[in-house]
Amino acid sequence: MKKQKYNELISLGNEAFAKGDLRKASEYYEDALQFDSRISDVLTLGFIYIDLENYTRAEELFLAILEVERNARSIYGLGLCYEQKNDKEKAIELFEEALKIDQNEPVIYFDCAYLHEELNQYDKAIAYYLEAIRLNNDYFWAHLNLGAIYEKLNEDEKALHHFICAYKIDKDKPMVCYNLGVVYSKLKDPNKALYYYLEELEKKDHYQETYYNIGILYKDAFNDLEKAKYYYLLGLKENKDHYLIWYNLGCVYALSHDYDEAYECFIYLYYKNKDVFDYIKVDPELDKFRSTPQYQKIMGLYP
Image (cartoon, one colour):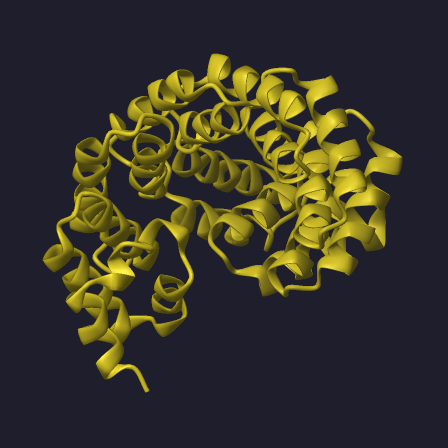
């Protein structure tokens, strides 16, 4: 009778889970535990609580399993709880322990890599991302994150390879087109950089920094100050406090000899971000601007 009731409640929990109602699923699973328990079901409940961000209860369940048997998923789940406590070293220790038991789970390699990356331990992060990719070559985020590390280390050809892999897997996900734009720009291919930046902007959830990079590209690579101005202004529509856009827009106005508009940009920075504002005193692009009355007017305010 108890087993029958247990199975009925687990079945109801599975139905709720399939509908995306995690809270109701957890309630059915908890009720079922009053009658019986299977390790697989306790594991499922633990990961449901991870999704519900109830890490205390998830940890209790994973520890209960570990008193009975040591399996990779319970150790991995416990590692996720420690990650949420911001104890990255302990989380890594648990992830690596899980991998000693199960070496065929790409998500554990990925999460281990991600934490090593967070700790700036790039060699270890690269090794774990590569293992995740070895097990699942279509792992979008592993390719994207690995490419980002290589780009940060200025290994741009390797970065490009993994960004292209990510793009082929799912070009509509955020950041991938932006990252391709960054690496092509570094590889001195501004046309391809622009192509991918513009593709990034077509996405509903596009990365706002793209406007800034396109502006830089038009200003420095294509010498098109009007297009640079256009994209800087679009960027400020979405984020009026992007101070580097304000600064570079001021530079574009100054290079266009529109010194009044340049003044407006720089005076905004004077009141909003003095660190960025200070560059106007030394930036070679502003040599001519520094000889204008507008510059002198700004400096009259400067302590």
